[in-house]
Amino acid sequence: MKIKDLFISLLVKIRRVLIASNHEPKIEQKRDRFGNLYWLVQDARSRKSHTFGSEQDVRAWIENRYHSL
Image 1 (cartoon, rainbow, N blue to C red):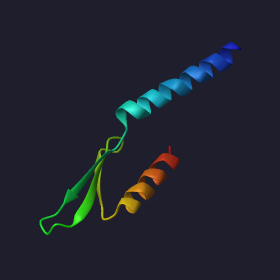
Image 2 (image 1 turned 180 degrees about the vertical axis):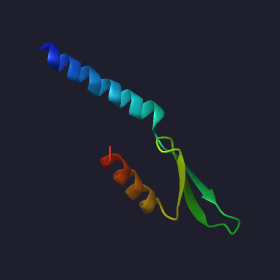
Image 3 (image 1 turned 90 degrees about the vertical axis):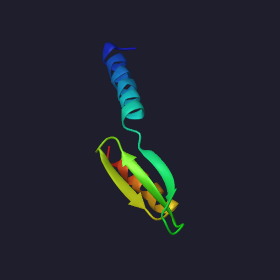
């Protein structure tokens, strides 16, 4: 392997570790005072919270988030 290839491989591994360890969103399923389910997502990367009414909406947000990296 060339030094350039080793360097690129190392950078890719470092990026994966940083993304996985520090930027994974925290997702919680909750109920409001009326018993309705909702999902609270805390995005460590942007330091914002998002609320979704369905699991499908959470999945769409996650997919969009990872495609924007």
